[in-house]
Image (cartoon, rainbow, N blue to C red; front, side, top):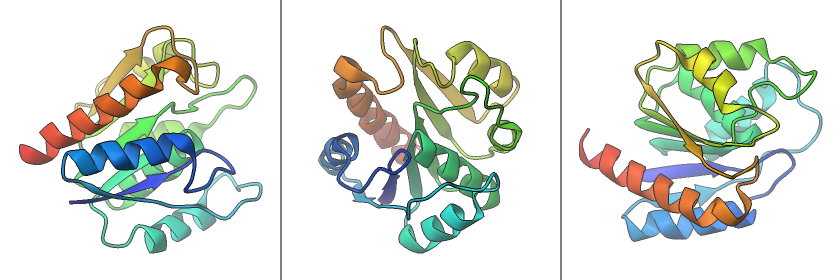
Amino acid sequence: MKAVLVPGFNGTATQPLLVRLKSALADVGIEARPVTLAGGRPKPDLAIEIAQLKKLGKGCEVLVGRSFGGRVCARLAVEKPPKALVLLGYPIRPPGKPRPLDEEALRALKCPTLILQGEDDGLGSPQLLAEVLAGNPFVTLEVIAGAGHSFGKHEKAAVARVAQWLSQRLAHG
């Protein structure tokens, strides 16, 4: 099984969270490929980034996105559902920045999806995500107590949870 790991905005394939996640996924038999998307200010439809991810993630059956990378992964997953999708710190509605296309994408997901969100994430509250996701049986939202958008001291637990969830999900279907 192969996964593509997409960093947050202007992040690279060497983003520490992705490096840790690659290692944790290897431990459960999942080959992970961290990627770097071209920088610059994205357009609302994320078309350029989605096209890049299609090329960079070719052959991958699992999408994992951190923050902005999660936005790109979710949009691609609506278009072409992977075997599993993981979104880490999904920035659903930062203050003053509504993102209706992202909300539509989350509602339209039809693949097994895990969203890990910090309890104190200033870019997307777990309560708002729960409202947006209400009624979508494909998405599991888990809140990490005491964590913010970057997970901080809770990053190790987040990485372990992703590896565990993907290992279980992919083993059972």
